[in-house]
Length: 311
Image 1 (tube, rainbow, N blue to C red):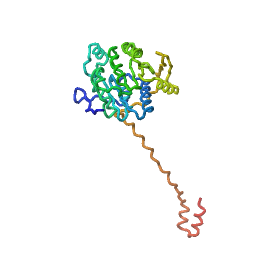
Image 2 (cartoon, rainbow, N blue to C red):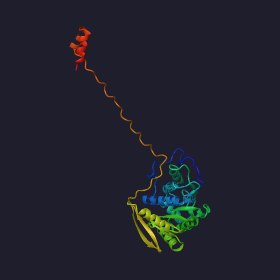
Image 3 (cartoon, rainbow, N blue to C red):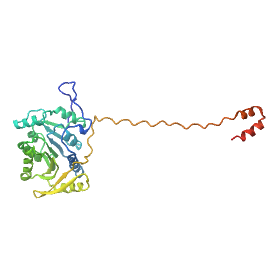
Image 4 (cartoon, helix red, strand yellow):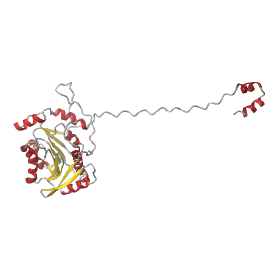
């Protein structure tokens, strides 16, 4: 169930946090090619199972960029849960050091300010380590899980196990930073899950891996069909662990339409149409002085004759 929120302010009650006026104003690392794939996977689920239901889950939210985007695909009867530490203390020293180094300015209020600039209600928010998520979300209820929390191996390993437990049989999971050089723990945990837990990768980008514990073949075929018509994306197919794995590059990718901010400035009014000036009325030539005298002095019959010959 979604929840409403009171007005978002800083520590000083008079200090209102800035509200983004466009999706680009929201800070975060959510590149156009991944926006395109989120749109494709979530849209594919809608199109292939229009009557189905499945909840959405994000582990690690930062300032809400991907959460704002994902929430646009929430259907009636579905629940969206976001889990993050935000201002809470980290559960262990290594995690605390990572938070202080990378997310020192992160606050829940900033997330709420951003999210409520695009959506009427907040998602279900779990402010806690991601290790608690299996006690907050029912097993087998999620159709899409985005994992973007801690980069430490032990924590990512736990997030993978949680995603597997919470996903529906054909649900999709997305892992961020699976190949970044500063996050070797993520890479080790994700590829370890491919080798040991039955995780089947479907597609990778420069930052994310998308996979399923279900049957990847229908997804792979449908995605390749979609990519065949894209001229702004390069893609190739590799064989990994005995299955095809799609690779995508799209530095100049055109992303899908972004959610619209409720604080977006109104477009300038259209200029008023130019005033229409009516054409001047025709001016009849004034009769000459001679003709005026003739009209006044001569008999009417002569005057009519002169008038009929006037040019």
